[in-house]
Image 1 (tube, one colour):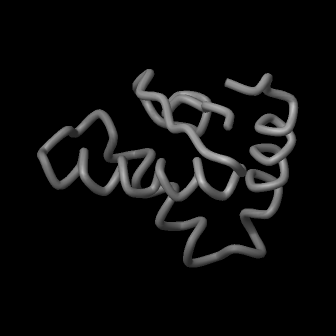
Image 2 (tube, one colour; image 1 turned 45 degrees about the horizontal axis):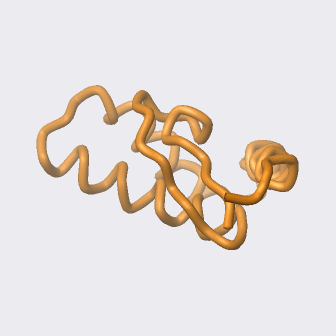
Length: 78
């Protein structure tokens, strides 16, 4: 298990997302951003828009995805 923060994934806060893979933490970040924006947290709005763009245009977002996977791989186990 490894942990990445909302900030490490492009968001504004230090909430940690733990998972077995980079995809686990990316999906947790997506859920976190949706919930934060739905709750009225405007500080997460820009990151939510960027995440929505990534899901709608995955080929254009492969650089971010590959960078995130590499950053996750470099992290120590929890």
